[in-house]
Length: 366
Image 1 (cartoon, rainbow, N blue to C red):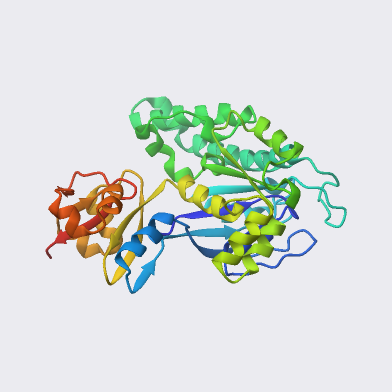
Image 2: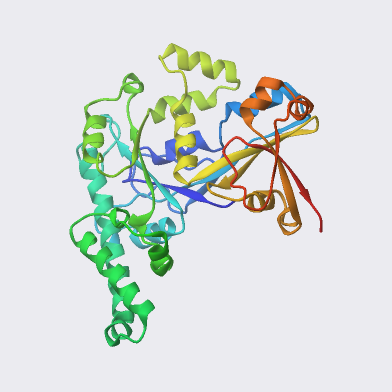
């Protein structure tokens, strides 16, 4: 599944350092703007304790976690919507992603230059918001000019409906708000989905703080929370520098010991990956047995045949039924055979909507 989160932010806010923590791909990290020019793509393992618990029961030969893709995109500066800096490249790269991880600098360090000379994460957020909104406004106005004539004649109902939706987007963007704040029905969204508006993508804010603030945040984090309180967006606190040190440790035990020493129960990177997974509207089902315990990614709301197709297209094409065990039942009873003996295996058809944590076995014929 090729859904991607793009990491964005002004230069020198810690994007590439954070990306390096997330991925085995090493983006260059340096103290000057535009250090990352081409987008770096990392395939990131999603931490899920349920996978480990299932594996401890079945003791498989192979354990396969689920993954997502994270893209580190070049730093943006004021004027990007008009092509300043690497603006055009930045905007093209972010348009190709499905969600945005917006990194904000929430720490002071005289040794790391800020592109605007001072630390103000809300100002930084607004700079990027404005550039994305201006580009979206341009996109909307171009489309409006194309459908205006058909909409005004009244002969094309779809054109009229599209035009009315575009007007809503334009009004919001002119107010300095993002396209995601426009409330549309699922049916309405289909009329303008191909616009791929930058500010219509779901967003997650990551406050990059110093080590001492990794647990509780600081005044800059509070500024971000206040500024985003009406956006229905999550705010996560991460100390990228310390996460970089943690990522260099070789064993899980060493990493956990390090976290305990600084008062954390889970790494910021782990929380970030889980939040990004949720941001993409993704969930996980499992297949498990003696040979393999495998986590599979699907889009929330997917029905059984579609989930089967994640494994192989033949599974979806020849789908007959799905045998489903709820995760809690499997853990409680300790095996598939025990679940079968206790009547805890459900037989589901094509209309079954897969639930997060389901343990599944598909019957198919092609």
